[in-house]
Length: 462
Image (cartoon, rainbow, N blue to C red; front, side, top):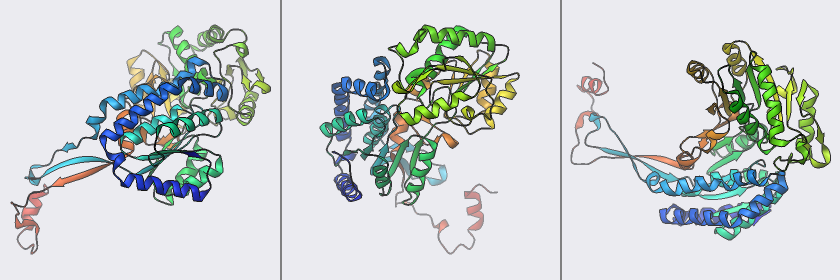
């Protein structure tokens, strides 16, 4: 079911999903696996439409368009392991609890609301949906209205694949999002920016609804002296300018040791030419900015620092060249907010401790990148910084390892998902203890006279 809905229609749809959940169908393991396999078949069927939609919304080249369809690899992973995840998880007990048994029993939360972003508008709706279905929930989806072509494809896919009592999709703008947030869902999963994340959290608090917030932040990229320069530059340029920089875990800025900076800058300039040619606006492999508001925000950031490459733009095409910025200060606007576009500031440090201090003075990022082969440098950065994820000597790839949790910390978000972490996010991990009746010692019952010494020993006091 898909609709653009007033409050009363959303309330009715939520009631319908609660009624469907009450039937017990979504909890049935066979039903879950069937739904996941149907979702897989639908993604395969709609793949050409998905690629075309993200090209329309973001000017995405076909290769990068398949990153949306690539969510199918996570889906396969979940289908493969779901039987094991859904089982009871035996818990150990101290000898003092003998002859009890205990276990953790995963159970679905109920009806989840999933609100998606515009930058990866298909993948970042479907990925949390996989976890919601796998855990046995019903789900209501709200794709971003800023990626309307993809929203339309999602609407068609959901309508043709799911019973609306199980999975429904609601299209619309801010008014629809507000109407959804006014309802008492059992979990809200939001991917987007910090500002809207705060609004989501405030709305959820009215119903004590738990939330997962996947936000963003200024993800630093530290470049040490002990590196393979050619490989490092390839990976930095790819991670930064993928989707024209509109990736939540893109390297936001480079923090390079001053001894390496001249060689790094020269190599970055050459690599941009290798990837996008002398005229990136004509490259078939370079995306565009999603809308005029984001475009104007980004070009305003070009007023600070010295342009080392790029710096040109075309309003009519929402094109901003892949840009390197030098002479940037921490107080400049480009360093005060997540860039989320194809602008890469380059800052320097002399001592690693200075780089770490600069990072730690700012909100914790969604990702942190370090290029160094020095294991002591790696250990120091890992031990002395905090981030949602860290990737050593590469960028972005940590997000596609399904055994790793993906999520933020502090201002970059709360909660994690992917693989089993998605299953757990959309589950209540219910604790169960079972005790027999054939043994019942009186030590815990009143009257307590003469039992204090025994109880002290029971809790570990002499």
